[in-house]
Length: 107
Image 1 (cartoon, rainbow, N blue to C red):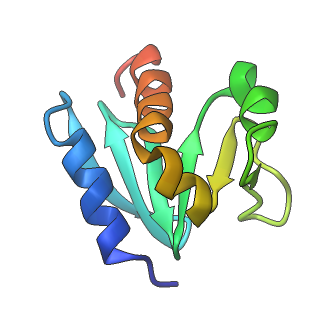
Image 2: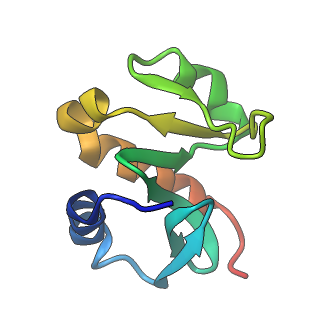
């Protein structure tokens, strides 16, 4: 599966100064890792964000989000964010993913 290079560049710009930033091909897209923990990524034209189990229901209550179901079953704690929400608040979504990733011990 391909992913939006334009969206990847925008996410990369938002995360570029974070400690421990790496990129990894995952879920048919490109994932951004902080200290070995996935924060967010790009699959197709959508953003995938790791919000964690505690913030999962709240994230799904936001407009233009849906469960991340890459495996055919929802991955609790991860959501897809559609293009309309990306246009409205990309920085906010990337920040949510980065905050969750940084709350975990480094790998």
